[in-house]
Length: 130
Image 1 (cartoon, rainbow, N blue to C red):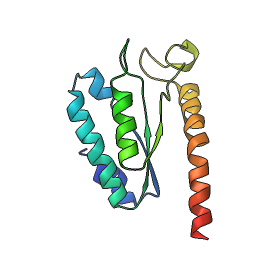
Image 2 (image 1 turned 90 degrees about the vertical axis):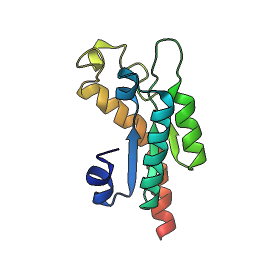
Image 3 (image 1 turned 180 degrees about the vertical axis):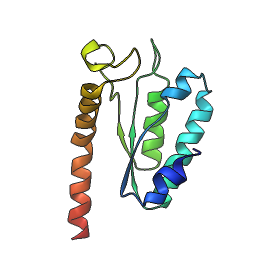
């Protein structure tokens, strides 16, 4: 939240990809606080006129408490939701730099997954601009 204005909004973005919650999960921040923060981030980005893409991480060993929150906020604010962007990445040592972070190849795969979903939105936005 503290970096949103300086690092994102001051750059006047057209589209903002938000991958949020991993550090909150690791630090055991209550899900209700993460949800409030994510909602505020989405609202502030949209108030600037940018499109929002929420990228979900499957957090937790047995259940994914974050996915439904991301999905709800995406629906509420008409943002694109891309679930489980890390699927198969953290279980493949060839795609990781350490036990919890992707390496270059892992990030490349994440980017490809995101681009596949985002490209049609950008193309439609360009078409509507005429």
